[in-house]
Length: 177
Length: 177
DNA sequence: AACATTATGTTATATTGTAACATTTATAAC
DNA sequence: GTTATAAATGTTACAATATAACATAATGTT
Ligand SMILES: [Zn+2]
Ligand SMILES: [Zn+2]
Ligand SMILES: [Zn+2]
Ligand SMILES: [Zn+2]
Image 1 (cartoon, rainbow over the protein chains, first blue to last red):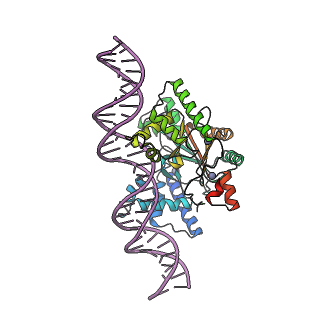
Image 2: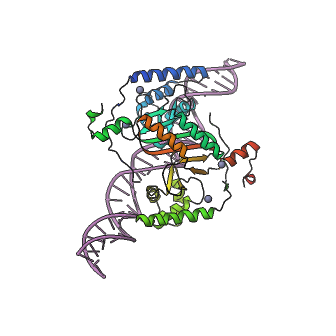
Image 3: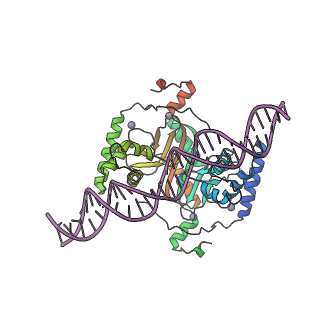
């Protein structure tokens, strides 16, 4: 028995912050990082990154494709997946394993140790360094004699805001601003 | 840049333990649990569970399908996915999100709090309660005001045995026993 | 300019997962 | 036992996610 939450048709942008700033910062950081590394942030790769940053939600590859097609008429699945591969390699985005989706990396230094809090209601994903969790994981792994390549720590549930709305019984779209 | 390990054609059963015991115990436990709950462990569901327990590796849905077809000639994707849904609901198996695959649940009480250590070389998956990790996650989540439904904590890398083989430079199949 | 490398275009296909409705099988009520 | 109900399975069709393979174009290097 899983807890299911009604699907919201048109997802509102819950976090009331200067999201334009988020986007601008993400792109600026990516550009600098690619220059430093001699990696090429081509128009397609840049566009995919921008699309991923349109919200703090994970986005599916084929949704990206649909949104790129009007701009890059020759775009195909491979176009998108290649751009995603590049961005993941550079640590600029993350794959959300439990959603088969992708999200812009929000950690300043693009380190890969992180925990994702995924809201099942508003779909927002919060990326947290969660250092104590990482330490506990490191200990557990050491005990097991395991050698880590990659960690995927993904928590599904309700974000603070959505949990609040659930308990107060609000549900209409206008309540979500 | 990811660390890649040569693919082994025929995967050996690395863990030298009485695996027949694992299977028997898993099936026995499942039977009792279903009786207690009034859930029906039908032949198909039971077969899927048995197949998942043939190894300590995660198995893909379509691999299960291929292996069931000779026995249940009418088996189709839906057949397998329904059985998997049932087994997951009962807590008898887990979905490994980062592999799109499934594995028998090895925790005695079929609790859902666990960490998976996934070996990229031998493909074995170790399930660990990792209580300290769970506590750290709980704290982190509380700080964020998040309300958990489900956790997926999946660590990829090399198990102790495979890490050992990598450092000693062994690679041939016969070395893996 | 010639060459090598990297990125993209293009076609086709593989893999993973669901929806919808019909049929069968098991359980419950009478 | 027969009938009503619910649960499980059969069946067809398709949706969604992802990759392989090879051709072409753009970029970087000598
Ligand atoms: Zn933002
Ligand atoms: Zn939310
Ligand atoms: Zn075993
Ligand atoms: Zn291993």
